[in-house]
Length: 269
Ligand SMILES: C[S@@+](CC[C@H](N)C(=O)[O-])C[C@H]1O[C@@H](n2cnc3c(N)ncnc32)[C@H](O)[C@@H]1O
Image (cartoon, rainbow, N blue to C red):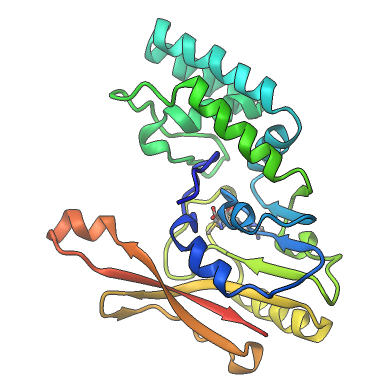
């Protein structure tokens, strides 16, 4: 499985292989306007890409990984050493700094030392996850290798902070767009927005069809016997598939029972 550089809730890491099998054979520019942790961008490894996200600090971190991998690794090492020497006070002081300045190096550090590595923002856009007390955080040497690997992988990508409609505004026939919006049936923990407006999103998909642009959309699927499939108008896509996405860890804890989780992919080609 892909080794993430940014751990992100809703990552498609476990589905990357199946998603890859279903992308078009050839395309010009690759667009991914809900980039999150970028697992599909990594898996596809396009020569030219335009990726975006509504979460501005996330995009600043992507640009830092791309443009200044060595400096970012060094800055992580400084913060990680502080944590080992000073303890939890270092974490909370860096978290306060981040919430003032939105420094990408602070976000990298927080994401690798917070509880379960979950990047979480409150409604004011402040990072609010706590320190993971029982872990030291990834070793700086290990993280440096991951950052450098990703940096090389995303050299042809332009990152944009903004809404999915803006990020894909320049797409034209021959390009390919992979869409992974927040799910409609789960309350999101995403920065600044809980979900997206369904009506506008459907209109956007219609426009992509009218513009002659290929897209793949990841969406709600099934969990055990419960079907969460969204009623997407049939004329908007040509194929719908369920792909396995591993078991729900929540269910495993609650009932000691494993439920197979499937996600949907829709394609207009
Ligand atoms: C399911 S996650 C994407 C996960 C990603 N595919 C991965 O593998 O890590 C959805 C992303 O959409 C972003 N988002 C939410 N509303 C958005 C909007 N209106 N425009 C662009 N991005 C948005 C969130 O910040 C989040 O990063």
